[in-house]
Length: 329
Image (cartoon, rainbow, N blue to C red; front, side, top):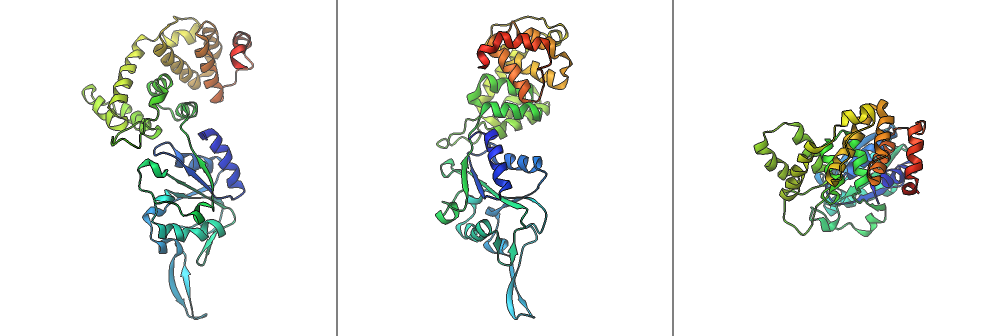
């Protein structure tokens, strides 16, 4: 299931306090989705890494109660006591079986020892798949049956929507649009330490903003996404020197048109980014796209609409729709 569908689905299940488990390969943004849901709903967010805990860390420490002459459990301070939120058990299947067992009661009955999870809190878990060569333990059937399970897939369009909102470098968005198979190159059978994932491309964005010397940049980016992907990306970056003048296009709605696919991907990303920063030149952009290759004209408009740019009021947009309606059906 792609990220946009997962966000809607898990958000609805959080409302109903249904425990959910999100599976997926490393670095694809599983925990980011859950954090985003909590932020959008105005909920508190607690991230527990059970792989770092002992069984007693979750249940608490026993102590002797003088009044009842019985042993009680003092619950841990990191568990919520009130309010509303999401209790996120990340990397649950990386925890030893004894720790997973201590989570049984908390997940199903919403309590453990003397502790009871407040009514306003939902439980969501995530973990890598067993075949991803991470540190995982087979999840016992009784624990697995306590969740509704989803598997997250990497989706280029979802990632591009996120990247525009995040302010990721235009060169990265353009390259992934052009070479979408390089968004995620993880291979569980390979011993390669560096590979491309949505997370590692975010590292590349930070690397580019660090303004490293050109003699170092190839090795540094290779350390994030791998050598082959890094070479392809840096070669693509040279395309930026062949772009038509974006400022001129937005100023009068006219400009040069290229037949080179890599240039068109880079140009499309540059135009979208410029309008997202200032949409006062939207009519000029739409006018320019009327003579652009149809698939790129549609991609530009759809990217803008996904990012909240309203254009139905524009007379140029009405002309644009008449021309490209056959691609929108």
